[in-house]
Length: 165
Length: 178
Image (cartoon, rainbow over all chains, first blue to last red; front, side):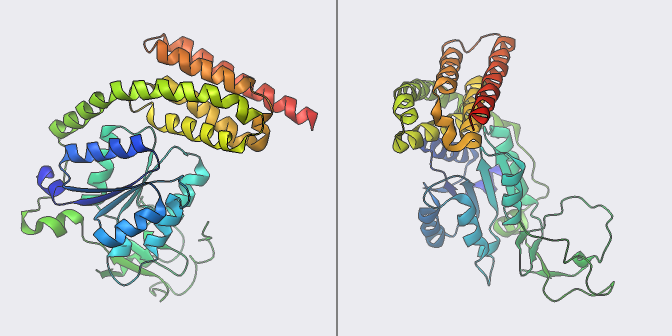
């Protein structure tokens, strides 16, 4: 089952390291992903995104001239359809709290810290393919629901009213 | 960062403020496979094995690339610490690359030493380049880890601690210098 879904995917990989691009592309091919497009930074990635409309985006954070945060923000600003809700997996060597919170607050779907392993990448892919989080749209945030745990809280529960895409 | 605290207590209990919208996104699996889709998707051990074999296959080539990168780093320290901003950029880019990749390709200690040096450059900023000692000691540790990948982990961890102490001493010395 897992093989057949991967065969139907188009994935965009964005990383300024040629080795990392090669590694990710090879791992995705090993999974059976049919279409993998690669870019070295955010501006090039934007062009490829518009041309190929991938199902999943895997992006590095620190790149020049356009980094992964700016690229992701641009994706989340696409309105009127499913394209702006594309799952974004950010892979980064910057694992400090500020970077992780920044990624979360611009709507990154999953964060993966370097060095990556085959298992961690595979698990994140399954997560975004099979168990998507509902999307939240507010004037200041557009991205997957940042609340992952169902814990009691003070205030109104606005999650009861959900629109269907 | 978004300030969420200001938005969570508005409106009555059952009212959804109009500016907030929740959307259920169909899973990619559901969308692509239609009726063939059987939830939940699980990690397939055979596929995982295949991915790990792929990484193993790339390891040897990456080891060669690492040695080449180390050689380049050794030539960059002097100009970088002498004020060459392009050399600084290149040096940081290579070390950052090592931090992200070495661990994946079976050189975890190289990755940790590179991470330590990256942290030093990121935290000290321009002042990091005033003294080449921290750079040379890190590059020596990386070379050692590359030449003896099977070294006792306790010794390599001890080296990492020593590098952290060196960074702390260097930072403190700069602080005293003003």
